[in-house]
Image 1 (cartoon, rainbow, N blue to C red):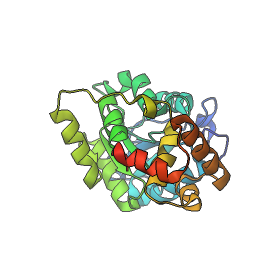
Image 2: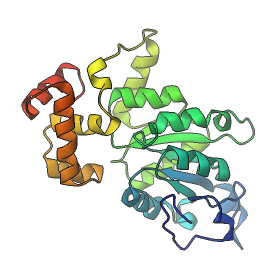
Image 3: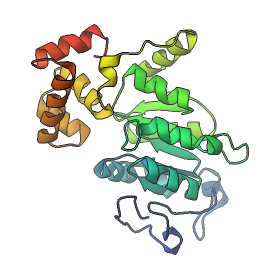
Length: 259
């Protein structure tokens, strides 16, 4: 398989040429000698996440098809790559990060609406994100995702979630289901927070982790970025919100129930 950033692994083949990240093939197709039972329970998956290291980890955890029944047929690191690979491979399930270059997971969902609506071969989306913020959960569910799990999920539970979503079920990490129930029980649109809207998605992630008391090194490890990048994001957040230090930032986030 060739990923969207140019790397390769042993799954690459002639069918993958021409579309970065894609390994096209018919749904449920097994390899030579694959039995009917294995083919019947196979789910074709595309991984969409802007951190290559994380994609590699997920691939290693769930991508051993003979064991898990999950066949990873493509990868992408941003919105444009994601739409290209999903269109080329037409997987049963897309594991979708919420925060992506090019407009985020919501933009991928918007541009994939026709594939989600396909009655014969629907593409279903399962959000897989480090964020557990209510607005992120609600945003992708409103966009059409069938579920939302956080990156603390185990490999076994992730495989189970993939199969459930492929069958049309809705799957959520336990505490996130309440966000969705509350949101759809109310007809009132959430108020617009102009201050929060000034921040990029990544800056919001860093903001929440800072407000929860994480050290810069811990944030860097969790978000797969450098400590220097964390420092840059914190400086940008403080400047945009006109705050002086992380203590003021924590109070600001707590007042808006972002923690």
